[in-house]
Image (cartoon, rainbow, N blue to C red; front, side, top):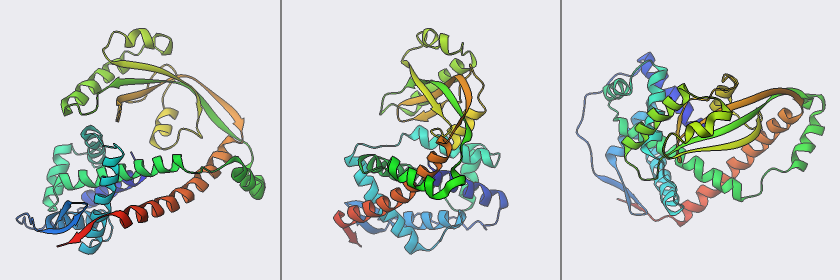
Length: 309
């Protein structure tokens, strides 16, 4: 899941835990259409819900901000549909479950807690969906554009001198294990495959026996990933791999392909300047991606059909 999604999750969790927002009295849903964006309606109820959610997560809570966000997201969803990008409900379930876990609640209890703040759980799900969708669109755009080159990285290393000295990194020999779920499958298919993946993980025989064991299940793919190091495995996945013993797997995660996990076949700590190079590449790529995302959004907005009601 995205950095922005994780940040929003933490904000929701902290706000609910602190109980700093007074729950309003329930009101009837307002269905008046405020805007039409590429023929998608944005209702006053949706604006009100987003405004409340923004306040809960520490953002700006005004209706203008909420309306602007929903307009942008409707434009992004049009682009995602054009490019065949969709986010499975199971991925949203996993994100909501993670938020609930942070405040020691079940997803149902989280839904009730949000309801006390006057926020429907679907409003949170739709914001998470929008964040993941936009991230995937931008990532696809970045891949198709000019990426940060070795010349850019080397120039920064030379400029920083000793700051870019060699450091120890960990190399992993990995296998990818995918419990395939066809796109468009019912929600229950993901839950069933996740249970099967958990069973597989609990009885994992090690990398040498992974393929024969996978063949005792239906629709399981085992793919050797070769060597990856900590500069290539960042974020929550990288953190989990550092805690995963050789001969075991990471926890199953819902992805666009189904339910996936990584098996750690071997590890080795090596001295390398790759860590410094990856850090510099990440900084330069983030700057490039931000500018590209701003330009991309401006381009989509210029072509969008927006009608105020």
